[in-house]
Image (cartoon, rainbow, N blue to C red; front, side, top):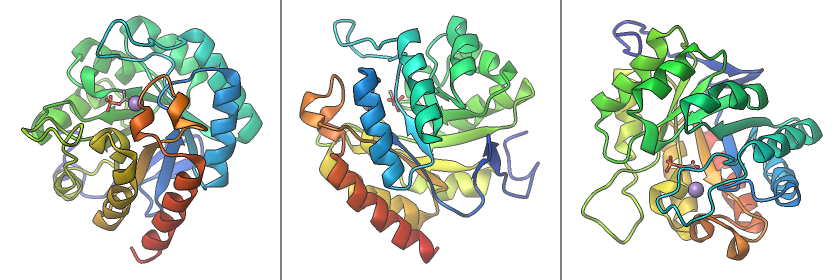
Length: 264
Ligand code: PEP
Ligand code: MN
């Protein structure tokens, strides 16, 4: 299989327009859950850049559990992301939720995110496999490692080898946390696959207070990067405020991560 370490013994480095993921340095992708306005996004971008992030994250196409929740700014949000990139030099990673949007999102983003809810949307996987952009493939809500790696296989089979995996927690019987962050997936994936793997402690726990310890643990476990939600004012966030870091918290998490990664 294309994603397996047996097929490709050497760890892969995914180059996203000059930023390398999997080369031994920890890559940080940070930003709001959703793009809410140009002001909110530009402020977030400045904060995450100051904390050493290489990528700005932010959803324009949002996969919301309830149809009554904020659904995202769609193409307007993509334009704001492109504006934030040109003002800061940050790379942009953003989710694409539907086949029809792959072409448009590819025009604005540096990296296409396939979210947990779409991990087994095989038409979408094939479509991003044909796109000329690196893909961030999040683990499904209840996906086994084998199912997750098979999803990567769908993308790679279409000719796109630039796939980065993202552990974001899975559904278990525990309800205290939003998901159960499977830190062991980092070590398991490193053994099974040559693809880089990053960890999202924000969706993985659903609680901002748990982001710092889990970001530190992921760094120590050998993750190639982190994805974290940061909002200028989490209390006003239109989505996922309870798991979003304030600018101050983010700076603290990020400096700790960089210290730990020095020992790795
Ligand atoms: C996200 O990262 O914006 C997101 C919706 O995460 P997930 O797909 O992991 O739930
Ligand atoms: Mn979110």
